Image 1 (cartoon, protein in one colour):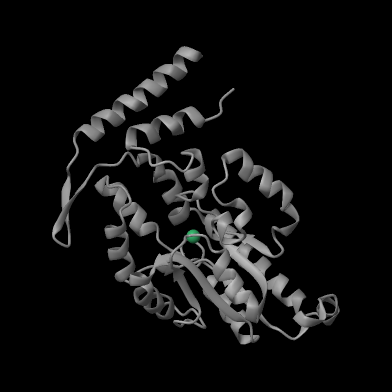
Image 2 (image 1 turned 180 degrees about the vertical axis):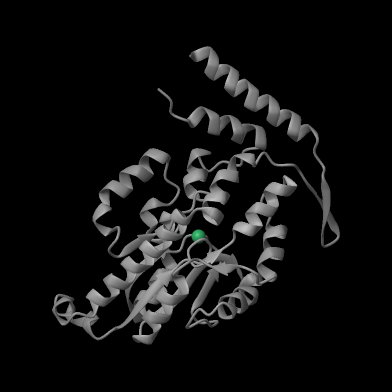
Length: 283
Ligand SMILES: [Mg+2]
């Protein structure tokens, strides 16, 4: 069995070395600097992308998340629940905070394009995709947020897209029908990727009823930069929050769950492939 594992690991490493050897696929112009884009070993993402694009189960999970969100929001309007709140919060306007990518917008065509071209994620290619304003909504997202907005709930879109992508993002969100989209409600990344400061800006004025995201960091800072095991431990500690104030959308394509496997280090393609192979639990 061990020999089999070694052979599998060796095979994966060898194939990565070969694929990385045939580097320098395209040269992207970035200002006056030219940037060499290497080939990526991203074949392993095919299943995750097909699940998002072709599995009716994925669609059902999204509906499940937004139905649950709506049930919780309705319950929040119940007078009995309002009375349980601290006095200062009772009259505050409600807010729903959502992440954007893979929470309300579907970027799987961008991911699929990278796989077809064997390209790694790069900020340049990503910004190009964002500025095309082509992303479709995640199933159920527009309907739920419109419902929330119709009830007087403010919607905040807290994303780690950057400032130069803000207008494209606003245009895309508006074009597919999201409510309450403006420079005020779309909070992009500023100096830090952590979202806590932005959540605090919102909660200074509004009562956050729900937080929705495909990444645990969209919900709380307790998960940030934690190891795989510590992420499990934090989820266990906060388990009562899930399906209540915290609602998670499925994303097997990418996320901090994967960065945690790489221990948040900048690994090359060969190292990443080896890390993935060595992390798999068998029996
Ligand atoms: Mg996201």
